[in-house]
Length: 327
Image (cartoon, rainbow, N blue to C red; front, side):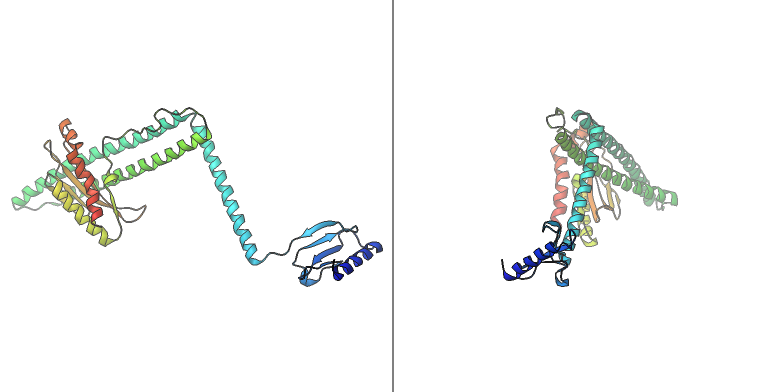
């Protein structure tokens, strides 16, 4: 013990013997040289440092930590905010878990709900494809009448022009619906995959659903599989030119419509006919545009088998490659 410390200790003893101080009135602190001091008050320059309060027997009854620096205060605030966010996420996960367990008794229930949702979306997509097929037939009829009028030296009247315009807009809208439903299919499958994994974790050792990893495949190929994203007018215009050329080179039916954002060839009539539509849609969710292609064959059995064959499949698969190569 140093002289200063020994002296302070003697003062402490003297104060205690005097019996004039009440519990907690004595202070203990350490100066910048590491020397311990005792007294009834702390010098102002040591107020922000760690110190203790002692009773008349010299026993510590309360300890004061040193004042925190501004950096430490900010760090503590950040840690508190992080802990609060973690607690919020934990509570949200627990709420989702409760919903999950209340919705499904077992994996079979969950898989049945997934398959039902996908079947519903596939049915909506199929209906829209059928509507597009009807609209394309209608468009082809309008174009045939327009060509006949042109050959006869007549111009289309307002009603005929309106019919062409409305049919084009309906085709574009129908394709936008299909793409949105296909996007919904993908997000639905991702969500159910997550829910299934979570359900298994909450029910460790539970009975597995036999068809949990099997999702029925639609007989209509997804347009999303052909879609290529572009950003900016220059890139999108370049890829759009490539898409139109690809359609002209690979379709076996003549062009019925070539507009700013859609190109449609005539409906298929023969077994080995391939009708192609290419279009560009603004992606209002992620920005930019998506350029995609749709192929159609005749609806009777032989035509559908041809459409699922390697020749048409190659046309479908190489579309993305052609556009990506042009980026």
